[in-house]
Length: 240
Image (cartoon, rainbow, N blue to C red; front, side):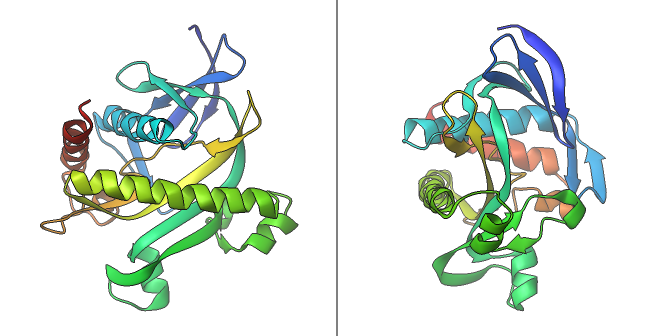
């Protein structure tokens, strides 16, 4: 595998071309951002932790019948992935109400509800990722109703699988953001971005301690230590 030129640079990741037309290399940066890049910082070692955590979770999904862009880990901060055409949507799954959802609905942080909530956001930074509904997505030409049904079904399947995995590690999956894309090799709609403490709320089941990006958002300190805690627990339960 030959690493080619940089083809995309985001706040927290870089994407490089390869000598294979349908494959790219993701490189995780030691940068974290919050509130649509209003808050930004560098944490040495964070990129490697995100890379390893996401590799474990995406590989777990692949092995359990949920197709993702992940192929294999390449190094400390890099992984080989299938090339995708981005679908500008975020499917957000909530098992408890926290963060902006709790504030918007006027309930206590961590409110437990009996159902699983799935939100849809238009993934455009300039618009601050607004909440939209299925009709909006279809009207904008982003996806068809059938494609959205598939994304919702996959998001719920991912939630079920990862809730069980995190529970084995003594971690509660409070919520998570999932992104999808169309695979360049097959055209299938697949999971197309990282799944990590940057995209999930993860709380210690015994203590309620936050083990995710909220440590940065809320100035709770020990960001890298908490991510390493998540990685170590996942390695233990998956045998990585």
